[in-house]
Structure formats: C-alpha cells, structure tokens
Image (tube, rainbow, N blue to C red):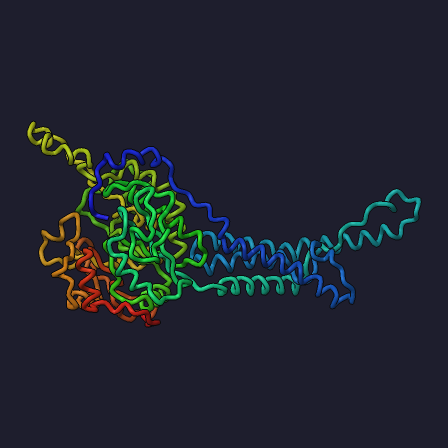
Length: 493
C-alpha cells in the first residue's frame, strides 16, 4: 500500500493504536489439543492393558495413575513433538517442552516408581499389625504412582504417534494476507489463480477499511466474500498503523492451525506462477522469505530506540514477506518491539507537515525545520524483530514479490519512495518472462548478491512468485493475452 492516506482520515483510529495486538490462540492451539488427546488415549488404554494383565475389567484405571502406558509420558512427548512439527525445533518453546518431557519421564520411572514400591511395602507391614494396633485402621497408601521404564517408553511412543497423526490429519495451508485500502482491484485475476484449487490448501484474509465487507456488490470473486478482518484499523502509509494491520492479519490467520505459510500481499500484487507451483515452492522451504539487509547510508535508526532495539540489530527490507508459522507467531505476539517502533520510527516529513508544505514554504518556515529520522516502519519492523531473536539463519534474506526498483535502469528510479506502476502498455509476456528468469538479487547497500534457492538442495530457483504494482487494465491484458499460466497444476519447485 503505497498511496498516502491523509492524517485526517486516520484520526478516528488513533485512540486504538495504544493497544498492541495480542493473540489468544487457545481454541486452535494444536500442540495443546494434541497433548490432551494423548493423555486421554493413554488413560483409556490402561483399561485394556489391565484386563490383559489381570483378566478383569476395571474402569477406575481410566482415572488412576500408574500402569501401562504412562499417560504423563504420552502427554509431554506429544506436546514436544507437536511443537517441533508446527514451529520447528529451533525455538524456545520446543526447548522448554523437551526439558519438561525429560523431567516428567525421569520422575515417573524414578522417584514416583520407588515411592509406589515403598507404599506397597508399608501397606504390607500395616496389614500384619494386630487389630488393636493404632495404625491398623489407617487408610492404605496408593501403590500405583510411577511407571516402569517399559511403561514410560510405551507412553512416549504413544505421544509421538498421536502428534504425527494430528499433524497429518489435515492438509497444510498457505494463508494469503492482503493489505487493501478498500476493495481489491485485481480480484478477478486472483479468482483465476484460486479457481479449481482445493480450498483445503489455502485461506484468505483481507485487511481493509474499517466496516468494509466483501460481498457480491464489490468484488468479482466469491473467494473474497466475507474474508475481511472485523477488527481492522485505518491505515496511513509510512506510519505504525501499517505494521499494526500486518500484525492483525497474522493474528487472524494463526487461529487456523492448518495455516503453515503466511504470505503478505498488496492490493496491486499479481501471482506470476500458478497455485500448484507457488504451493510447492513455499511448502518445500523450511525457511521464511524476508528481505533483510543492513543499510548504513540511510539515517533511519533513532538512538531513542535503545536499549530495547540495539542499533547493531537494526535491519531494512521489503514489506512483502512470506513467513513460516513459528515466525508468524513471533510477529503476532510481539508487544516489546512494536511499541518502540510506534513511538520512534516515523517518516519524515510527517503527513501533516507534507500537507502544509506549500504554506510553510511561502513563509520560509519549511526550510528551517531540521531533518528528522525518515523511518518507514514496515520496511524495518519484521526484519529487525527477527534479527533481534537471532533468526537470521532461519530466513532466506529476500522477498518473493518483485518490484520495479529491484532492477531499475537508473539510480533516480531506485531512490523513489514508491516502485514504478505497470500500466496496460507494460503488461507484456516479455515482462512476465523477465521476472521469472531472475535467479539472483543484488543488494547495493551490502555489496551482496543473493542467489535464490528454495530448500537445502541449493538448486537455483526463480526469485519471485509475485509482482507489483499492476493496474487493473494491466491485469486485464495479462489475462486476455494469457501471459500468466494460472491453471492449477501440482508443479514442483
């Protein structure tokens, strides 16, 4: 979203900016559900293992501790494996879950097992007391407290099986997250992209103007019906409301546990490949795609951001990112870095000063105003946040969305705030093919050439899956001349 909205348009939403978005994902917390399911299944199986051992049915085994298999071991193992499958094994959540699992299983086969055996011995001693002994009427101690190593291993295996079954029970989705001022001008092109695709493979979320509802009266594609966020805010380009809108999109998409990849798109974006290729490309990569580099030439960092945001962690890059689920959770849940951006990362000159520029120039006031830090929040926020978390090795440091300034012919074109717009005359088959043929990206600020790879095979791959900024008439030409092969096919990246 590159068009500047006036500050007056956003005045109604400023009051809500103070609250950082926070995600409450309990209803769709797959690791939590998996852990509870593993516990319940282990307790249920104890009824059958008890019958096999003692040849009698005992329904109380469903609520008792001890026995085969270990329900505690199944629970913590299922939790750890589910977190690892969903968010990767490199995060603190997985580390905590593994440590917890080790402690619980060690306790079950150690302290609790021996406590149960001591209780059994004490009960035998009490039984031998004569009736007149004061301890003869004492309630017997519980003997089934811990587990044998075999029972612990059985519980752990059960937890792993449940976690893998829960993971494979549904098709992983790509969440397409659209930032729009109101409607989506290119909805007809995206309709061709999603057509004939299994809807279990994708989901759509749109952040639009507050109160705007997508229906048959304002969109040409049924895929976008009612896909708007109900808690959207008024967005001003170059202000923190932009990244707040992004966080709202990630938060909404995270409620669906099947969403495993999250692609941020503008209203002027088009896909340059069909859905099958895009799906295979994104799902085959274990990394996020985040354009991230160090730009020492621009005066964007403010010392006031320290110590929350150290200057050495400051990064810049394209707003248009594609995240794996674990990184999307980090962005949605962040309430430490975002408030600092809201307070100190602001564009210069600000919107109200731009509107008054002519008047200020007339009185020679504008020329005497000192320059501020020209900080565009959406060009720094995710890049800096992930770098602060030490996740640089978990991202491909490039965007999947082509913009014309990436390969502009002149330095003047590259220095503009907004990329060039593709009109009807520009939308040729040659343009699309040129975008597809790009296999590396050069970063002048770091004197670095980024080779484009999809996964660990290190095979060269196209750099871009999407492109912007295209006008509706340009999109019409692309469809009419069939410059985009959007017919769904399960192509491998």
